[in-house]
Image (cartoon, rainbow, N blue to C red; front, side, top):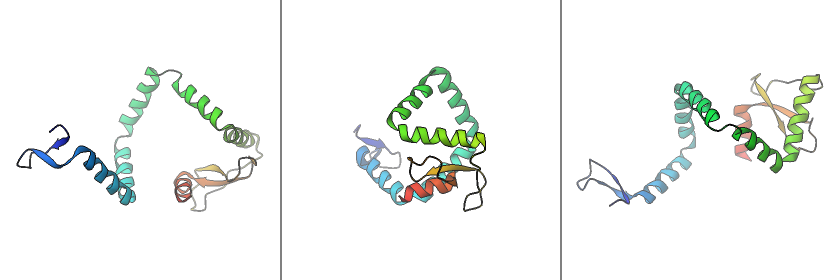
Length: 137
């Protein structure tokens, strides 16, 4: 019976589907209700910001150097992206690039590269629009 979740409402005290099947059902529901799930996630994150920040601080204390290691791995796997990001950062600092508002009107924007071999050819886009763009691709 360890393959079945407990359910106090059920006559035998267990759920009618096994744990593996239940996970598959939940996964499929989440896949077909993405917007609803994102809404739940957003609401949860907004109401638990303090806990999340405390968790991050604790994680960094317990794992010194991990973030640096993750950055190093990213740079090694994506050297073209890293070079493009650094070029944009430098150009912004030197005034060669100026951030523009997103098409939706948001002024908190990030640089999107269509082609990393052209590091200063960027589209300024806010994070929500940027995520939508990449989900569609």
